[in-house]
Length: 157
Image (cartoon, rainbow, N blue to C red; front, side, top):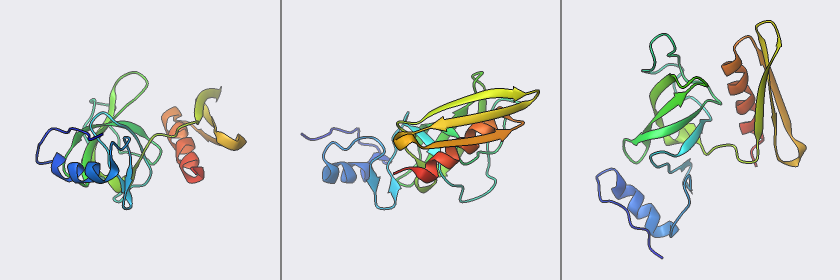
């Protein structure tokens, strides 16, 4: 079964990969980085540069962190894409360009929960396969959750 792809300049490299991978699933590993498509969910697994040009909702915008979840909104070329991270209230925390090597597919089989454990202090807890668990505490709920996901990325099988 052959996958049909639209022929755009960006997709030409992906067509070559699709021919070899025969209907590959999203986030398939090719070489050292995964190939992502528009609307794929991703997790930031590392940052090749500590700060980058970002846009987002006024007053809410911040730099990406390891462990942040987002969605690919545009594939720029065979190695880079634009990712958007939205917070729990629907505001864009950041919109930035990443190399595929900085991103990972979502953490399947992991569940995360964030609770306020004291006034202004949040604890994020994650439970994963093989009874693995991770935990992070911070005064910023989003940072606690991102740190928890970053710890879980280290244990990914």
